[in-house]
Amino acid sequence: MSNELRIEGLSKTYANGVRALQDVTLTIPTGMFGLLGRNGAGKSTLMRTIATLQEADSGSIKLGDPSTSSGQVLDVLREKDAVRRILGYLPQEFGVYPRISAEAMLDHFAVLKGITKGRERKEVVAALLRRTNLYEARKQSLGTYSGGMRQRFGIAQALLGNPQLIIVDEPTAGLDPGERVRFHNLLAEIGENVVIILSTHIVEDVSDLCSNMAIIDGGRVLMTGEPLQSIRDLDGRVWRRSIDKRELDDYKKQYAVISDRLMAGRTVIHVFSETQPDPSFEPVTTSLEDVYFSTLRDTTSTEKAA
Image (cartoon, rainbow, N blue to C red; front, side, top):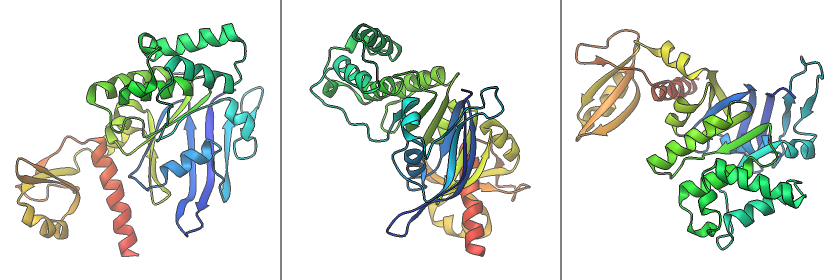
């Protein structure tokens, strides 16, 4: 089956009235796809719905490619068992039994995934532990693993059964820089031949790994595109200036401030403007963070105007 995930008109409102997803439409091709948004934006609801763990109120999710000779397409919302057989999922909160070894736990997950032959299962488990650089620590109990090791174990279980669709939800939150780099390398290697959806609020994860992305907020897709092209589209239109923190509110009234941060006791602001706002501003080498914050600001400004 050719890997392409097509989401059309997906909506979900919880019993408390929160509209978690609002008419979400996305086409996600083979490779790494970044779903970027702040906490509470709707990312986890979307991931859980794709992973068949939650029902949608309306819309559709299809996996496959009708243009191929087989024309095989899976209806994700209706054919849940078939989807689970080709799905790898690493949720945001991935619990483990602390006293069980990584090898024994992965063997248990392999049985649940349908790998019932003992010899085959042993080979698969060993191969995945090597791939995730955990083989030397395979006899250790999972409770002794670092955060990065647990995340790599989570990816190992997600890779059982050679999945065609892999979902990882906030995978690098809490990892130290070294573990984060190792985890990035592992995801990049895996993402060459399957659909991987990386849901995160960490902008660098998307800019480092993903060839396609979407920004989501308030349950709605605000923009889609290629990270590098999105950065180029913003080039020459972001400006920076250092100000006193007490001046921030005044600057927000005068300029389109997309972000601010404290550096060396001063507040540094990034402003969106087609031309240099005034000589005190200097041009910025645009980053995906600027794309992200300017997109969120545009949406907030539109909502206030309405």
